[in-house]
Amino acid sequence: MWILIESWKPLAGLFVAMLLMIELGRYIGRRQRRADPEWDSRGVGALESTVLALLGLLLAFSFSGAWSRFDARRELILQESNAIGTAWLRLDLLPAPARGRLHESFRSYVDLRIEATKGNEAKPSAAVTAAQQGIWTEAVAAALVSGDGRVAQTLLPTLNEMFDIATARYLAVEAHPPTVVFLMLLTIMLLSALLAGYGMAGGRRRHWLHIGCFVVSLLLAIYVTIDLEYPRRGLVRVYKYDQLLIDLRAGMK
Image 1 (tube, helix red, strand yellow):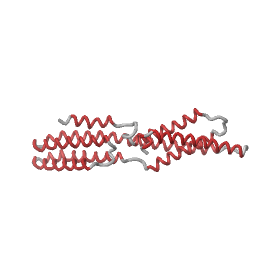
Image 2 (image 1 turned 30 degrees about the vertical axis):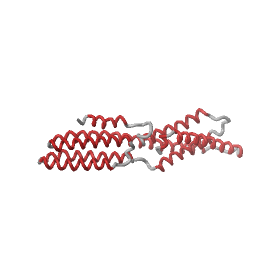
Image 3 (image 1 turned 180 degrees about the horizontal axis):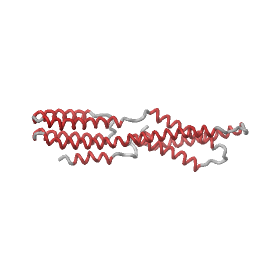
Image 4 (image 1 turned 90 degrees about the horizontal axis):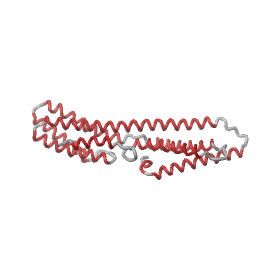
């Protein structure tokens, strides 16, 4: 569904589709009235209201869920930056030769993590996994050489947390509602447009102001919801939080 926020063509197509559904609903309604002038439309309004209420409920839940996941992704970036910064400081507990090697490994690892944020973070790269394994192996060996058990107790849990948060970020990026949910939402949007057009069949003229506000409002709602779900593809971005890792890397002298 992210294609809706990467190109104007799907949005334009959805805009046209909704206008066509409104026009189709109006056409069906006018035919109904011509075929049966005494047709009583009482009760139809209640059905229309039910569908529109369902659409509003689905949009509300979708937006709320998208915002929660967006906020969680930002929080994970902050947590990872803090975990890496803490682990970096605790490297000072190690003997000089091992500390120097781990400092260099950390710089390379943070460079890889920054590079990952420029993409979509769809899955852990082999380079990141190898860097994590290398850092862990070096840290364990250095802790054993130091001969102080408190070094291992202090440093290794921090490294473990740092790696766990990186994995959690990958999982958070992939945490989206099933595609069928968005398809259902788009289908109900089109059905709502059909019913809206049917409800306007009694007028001789089209109410373009109401039609425009109705269509644009729904399109904005679905666009922002999907944009929050895929914050590295559309207008919504998390670059300010990405800067935390960049600033951290700059301070690793």
